[in-house]
Amino acid sequence: VVFVFIAKLFICINSALKRREVFDLKVIRTMRVLGMILLAQSLVNMAFVWIQSEIGETILSGYDIDIVFADTLDYTRIVLAFVTIMISEVFKIGYNIKEEQSLTI
Image 1 (spheres, rainbow, N blue to C red):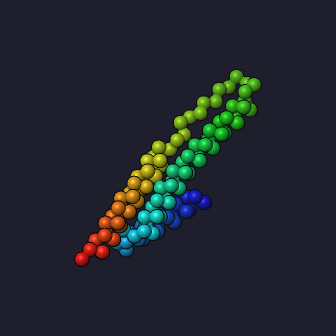
Image 2: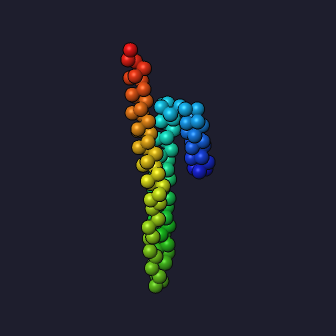
Image 3: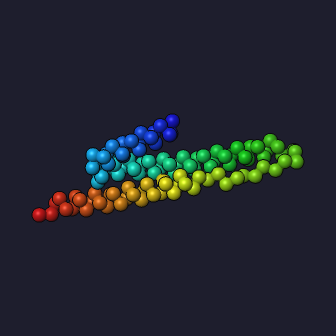
């Protein structure tokens, strides 16, 4: 479900950029939401893997088996999320400059 929503947001951003609506508040908000969703999804995924490893360790505590919590943090998705959020902030600054320019004579 989340992947479908991310794809929908990406398509909305892509179509707005094709219409040359780069400095539009709707595009800026959509990019920010996309970055937040990517970040949240990565952190929730890591939490689920950690919980599963804790449950597995509890179940197998009587046996001579060690469960190692592997590094499951998806750094690529986290970096992509922060880059998307930063780009949305740059676009917001561009939007403010555009608004100021339209108000000057």
